[in-house]
Amino acid sequence: MRQSHKLSEQEREYLSEIVESSMRVVNRHQFFNWSQGTLQRLIPHEILICGVDDGARRGFEHYHFESTRYFREEHFAAACQVDSGLLRQLQQISKRTGNHIVVSPSFSTPDDEQDAALLAFVQQNEMKNLVAALCVGPRGKVQAFYSFSRVEPLTAQTAFFAELIAPCLHVTFLRVLMSQEQTGSASGSRSGRLVTRRQEEILTLIRDGKTNSEIASILDVSPWTIKSHIQMIFQRLNTNNRTQAITRAISLGILRSE
Image 1 (tube, rainbow, N blue to C red):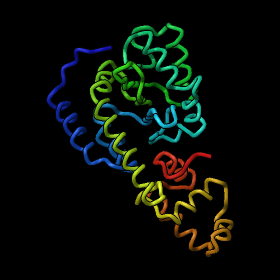
Image 2: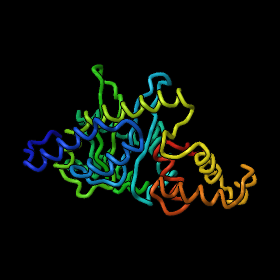
Image 3: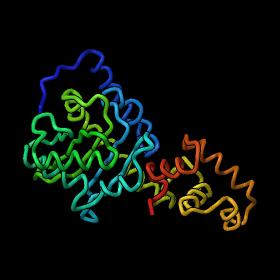
């Protein structure tokens, strides 16, 4: 799918800004802002799914960053499935085409069985469309993939941009994961400075379905204190309600989906 698209002067400026700003990204909150901000200038999207091979566990860890209410945890869980999820389908198409960029709906072979299966999967899981870049090692093994969905517009030019920025995206996300691991081992917290430890506790209890009164009883504080913490959580996560806060916290790696 290599394209002969020639970057315009403005597109070159966008690319330069994306690369330069990526150097300042060291945690998930910054990665979210970068991917939903500067990166949008070349690839306007609402969902970014990142999958990275964890050599220690011999498997892939998946992460998602989104700015849409349609993509929910059950959709992300489907994308993470080993036998039928996103990675398996991307690998199958990449192997068949010999290309590390996969687009759905496909530009060239929309009637192929694998393409049709991927498109059905994408649409069933509220992703609408997809352009994904697979990062392959020297021995041909996929080391990571980065999948953009709800892309507008999805064109051959968009696919070219995805291939162009994939190396920068990969290096940036690896830096985030490395920083997270170092911070986690040093402080025992996965949230960094975005929310406090107490607010992380409250988010966990909200995720588990607890009311404000129940949370106050568990933490042995007043309901007014809990309400104040929740309002601060909304502010820090840039959300308006409990459901949005939990979704955003999971996207940023503050919480695990359980």
